[in-house]
Length: 126
Length: 106
Image 1 (spheres, rainbow over the protein chains, first blue to last red):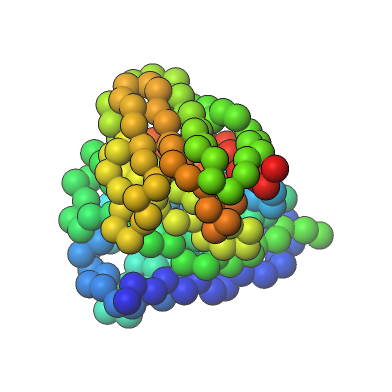
Image 2: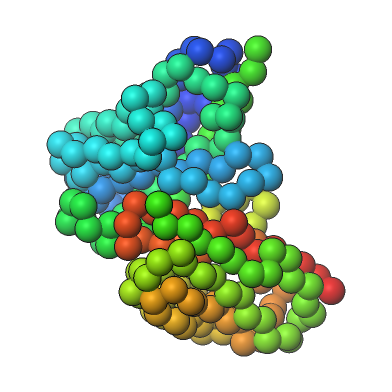
């Protein structure tokens, strides 16, 4: 069965960096675009980044652009999120999520997210 | 960015009730809308995609409708397991979510 397991969260000071990982199993990882989505405590969901199935294309919203970098290693079935220059407002549970269909057509946005990990909490605080 | 607005923010209902949640988009998104259920401390679960298609394994008491800018999620007969927060998500452009609707016990 499909499993996504995040790790790497923790408490970090403002301005510092953190790298999250998401280990995937139970499906052909290299066929699916992948996403990171975050949820601040008691708040709603915010999409953070997408990466194409082969890792060649990436996109993220302005709120994290230039600070967060999504990447993947298909040989290890693992997705990453490198977070730099962290701010208090980045405090959230971070989820990795799989595209609903394989071989996402880049720029179409025509996929929702069918499997999610359990999330990893990132707390940015001095 | 396309803004998604859900109503109500909180809904009090009893087991067996018919429940309807509304989601409005700030511009037309055709039928590119999904609904998720989230329980406390858990990840969201996909219920409905493309506005009205039921995800595999999701009970048939859940249904979705709408197109353009107005959408609804209906639970035909609320069950104890359905008390949760529900989010809509548009995927016509970079993904955005509604603010959530909490369905609580009346």
